[in-house]
Structure formats: C-alpha cells, structure tokens
Length: 106
Image (tube, rainbow, N blue to C red; front, side, top):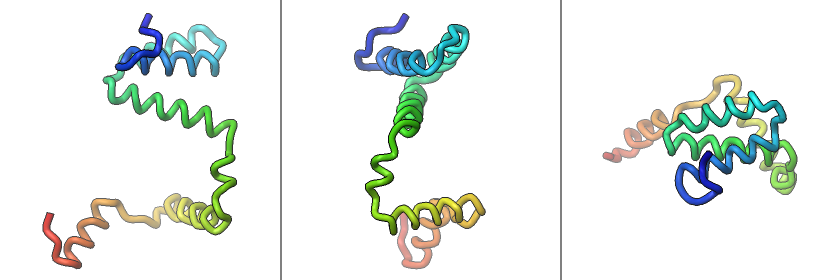
C-alpha cells in the first residue's frame, strides 16, 4: 500500500485513493480505479488528482461561479457554446497568425 500522503507519487496516489474511497462503495471498483491510477506515470497521476479534486468540488460547490459578474458568466457560456459548435481556432494557429501579421520571429 502506498505512503500516507507525503510528497511524491505515493502521496499523490494515496490522496487520490482516499478521494475515490469516499466516492465509491464497491470494493472491486475502488481496487480497479486505484490500480489504474497507480500504473500511470507520476505526471499523469498528478493530472488525475487534479481532475478528481475538480470533479468532487464542482459537484458540491458553485460558489465561485456564482460570484462572477453576470456579464462574465454570460460571455463564458457564449464562448463554450461557440466551442461546442466548432467555432474556434487552435492556439498554435492563433500564435502563427499573430507572428505572421506582426512580423514576429520565434
């Protein structure tokens, strides 16, 4: 069994494991999730931890969203709708466009 929350991969795995334990009651499900996470490289384990924490916190709390000004929330929702409709450009394309337009090398 991994460490108890110290630094490094074992600490991250243990934190994710504790979060998952609180979410699922089926022992086989918990073991499968833990096994999958443990098999990932350390940087991906950190990503999983972030995803799990965001999932848990977003399920219970919309306080930050509700504190945004209505105009910001509206614009974010409009932007997400545009993205869902495919009305966006990739960051690399935007950077290339700006570099070309303004003669920037990089």
